[in-house]
Amino acid sequence: MPQIIDGRAVAAYVKNKAKSEVEGLFKNDMPVCLVVILVGNDPASCVYVANKRKDCDELGIKSVEYALPESTTMEELLALIEKLNQDKEVNGILCQLPLPKHLDETKVLETISPLKDVDAFHPENVGKIMTGKYEFLPCTPAGIMEMLKYYNISAEGKSCVVIGRSNIVGKPMAMLMLHSNATVTICHSRTENLAEVCANADILISAVGKADFVTADMVKDGAVVIDVGMNRNKEGKLCGDVDYENVSAKASMITPVPGGVGPMTRAMLMCNTVTAAKKQYGI
Ligand code: GUN
Image (cartoon, rainbow, N blue to C red):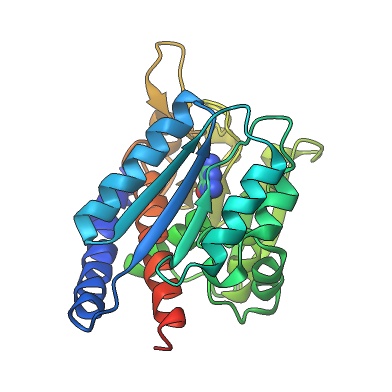
């Protein structure tokens, strides 16, 4: 059986460190504040936003939520972001995605100040990830890097395959693995011989969003398997992209769902918020 990469344990470790930093800042009259903007009432987004509030409460970070109606206009949303950009008491700003269809997501993300961009979605922060000189990383790839570090998994010279090319996970993930000196391949819906390419990976990272997408034949013996997926199976149970039972017979290490990448994504948002606050306080 493979070693389970325990995302909850690593998240607790990371959050503990962040909590100490928040306490230290607070004692020196430097409170930390995260603003989350939610437009509309997408049920999954409501859950994610509630979880962010819980995490902030746990760490002593002030959290402010703007729950805006579905009918919110671009002008209204941009005006709010501009106001928050100027507000010295706000350290981090996150606009929950997806936005309702009539809103221009790109423009919204570009309007959030790069200094308060705790998602690292602003083009300035995206560009910095390319060069390796970044302040913020998107939370999911950052969380995966933390897990690899915690378990002493070196990517040096290894073959890494990332399945999925999203701006939020796949692309930045590939770049971070490249910075760690892995030989990186990004696979996507048009990739030919997907199983064969994946079966060559020492580290396989799946961010597809389909239950049972990664089957045992796609996994090399002894591979490290990281499952970013968050899906429901036929029985309605939460599951990742990986056929966990069969892939477990081949992998040396694997992240479960739930309890793998998910808790790390949440924890890294807290870390990014602390980083933003420290930058703004000149620390
Ligand atoms: N919706 C799903 N994941 C994310 C995320 O990481 N950040 C934001 N802003 N919205 C999301």
